Figure 1: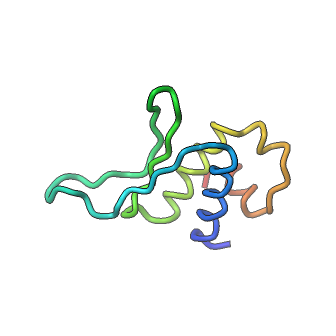
Figure 2: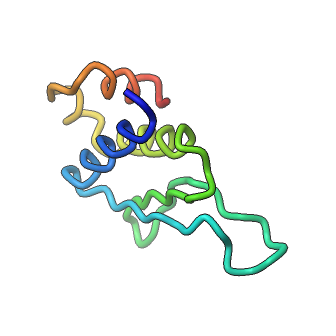
Length: 93
């Protein structure tokens, strides 16, 4: 499974587990400012995953996989997932 398919599958899992994901544009609003990077933050006690369009897909997959493990790890353990997705979640991509 390629990174684009992994990202799509992980986005679907995130939606099912009420994990908010925001996609940031690849170009920053200000010239000369360091571009944003994908990551996870807490806003009013709620975990939000920010995926930056300028990051490589493998980094976006890794950030989302780690956030899913932290947010929904127990319920993901009890659920059947295709082997490629399970491996991605286990290693954090």
